[in-house]
Length: 191
Image (cartoon, rainbow, N blue to C red; front, side):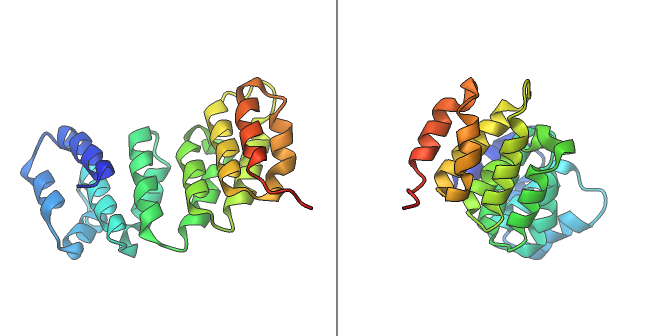
């Protein structure tokens, strides 16, 4: 069993109270049964999360909307599981959705996992969204340093020269300076 699935399974087993419904959703190979959990009313959040996660890992596009909603959830473990499944789903809408979540200033407190997902996807939307998000985090007294640090690390991993100016700005922030130096070293020279 995949480590991320094992972690999710244990967390949701506790949340469900160890019900037979949990075990059924974990063991079924019927994608239609899992998809029905996402569309039928009355299913608890833990069941929807498990169904979406399993469908996402299977590459079933019916999981996309539920996973994006979970990526924007206030509970970090739900966000992390959704990001993991979205990265494996292979849906072309994923990067656009992650970029929208990462750059939404009203939801910046929940942007950490969308930022990390963008770096992992390395999609055309990734670098512009990470630059925008990081630039907004460079203001004085910004409380979202973990988001800023994830942007710096993501931009370093992507190694795109467009990130050089904002990474140079990040050098002035003690909490980001070391990561910014590492990120800048990963960007090829222009000449």
